[in-house]
Amino acid sequence: MEVQKTALYNIHKNLGAKFVPFAGYEMPIQYKDGVVKEHISTRTYAGFFDVSHMGQFFLEGDETLTEALEKIIPADLKSLKINHSKYSFLLNNDGGIIDDLIVTKTEKGFCIILNAACKENDIKQISKFLEKKHKYLLNNDLSLIALQGPKSVEILEKLIPGVSNLKFMTGNNFDYDNENLYITRSGYTGEDGFEISISNKKVEKLISFLISNQVKPIGLGARDTLRLEAGLCLYGHDLNEKINPIEANLKWAIAKKRKDVGGFNGWDKIKNLLTNGSEKIRIGIKPEGKVIARENTKIFSTEGNEIGLVTSGTFGPSVNAPVAMGYVKSNFAKAGTPIKLEIRGKKYGGIVSDLPFYKKNYVK
Amino acid sequence: MSEKKFSKKHEWVSLDGDVATVGITKHATELLGDIVFAEVPDAGKPLEKEGQAAVVESTKAASDVYSPISGEVTEGNKAIVDDPSSINSDPEGASWFFKLKVKDKGEFESLMSKEEYDKFCKENPN
Image (cartoon, rainbow over all chains, first blue to last red):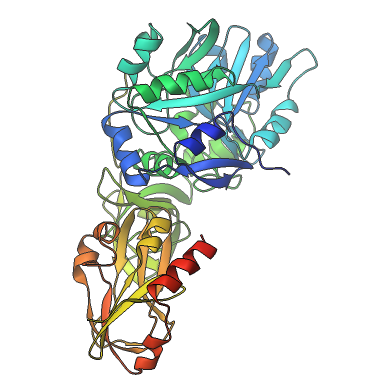
């Protein structure tokens, strides 16, 4: 398959991006400033992220569409109000996570934001439940720009009046340069911010405005350190088809009504785990000192028994310490539990930590 | 102190009598990005030429640092362990990794000169 590029590829190049192949796309991993500075500028001012590789999947249909989607998504889509968003998943028959996603109710149906690496398969899995009368489209004519950080609202309000009225996890249509934009107040950094869906033709103009307001471009490197500090999962690392939402410590993302009534893929398994608990569970980890526990680092109890595996680990620039996530046997999951991490053949200390490592208040 | 010599694995070495100082090159730090962790060998540790000697990690990945020459470690630089980001700011000066007592000065002489190393980096940009 040919490597794909987003509409902003040349802009990234001019901004000094270093590219890496990611989910079939050439994506910036960092720009001239480097990961740490990009991370800090997002936390203290604002940064923009080109996330146009992600799938913007639009579905249209009546209440039968809602019923169809509820078979594979455990959110309460029937009660979801127009312009409101939920974090949820696509589940397989065993309750395993096919992908994690944000679903937004639109006037005609739903918009679902899918991970780039999963989007083709996601659509295959979703379409199994759809009827002929349901329309769907993966819209590749649209770019997706995340604007994240404490100054985001002030800056974007200057260009698009009204965005400051959005609450966290809601969206709306806005006019910009004779075009309709869809903007949600959401993100993947633990900061206040927006995700802006805009045509490939207009996206450069939006980026020029952001740059003229000193908003820095942020690459995948800092996106990873930001999301990990915020305790957010990365699909393919912290989540996969063999992990269910209970193990992933994401049961909050399954609607209460759906937990009680079911009617979605893997419900039997999930109902059982909700009652009896899971064998393993996702936790936060603070390694001792400066040592970094990367993905696939083995986790041991202080007695020396292997109890789990790290699924993401890096240095957290805002925490100013290494941070990690992983899965351990559930009886070791309590925050404060001392553990050992095997790195380059040596055992290092660490403790189980509450997530997130870094917390800010969203605008609710 | 001698002129610096360079290895293909992006270490630099300078020689003072029979004690060599080893660090990673500016070019290496540019490839690595922001350095957030360093591990250096303890005094007394024997090192072989091109053997694994130290570890350096950026936000993105961990990399091994090799000793371009064989010898016995006399000192690891604790300052870079305490402040790994100093490796980015002064890689070929204060942020050396370790010193070692060399066995064979011929190993030092066989390393690349500055000019040869710069040429090597140009031809092998990654």
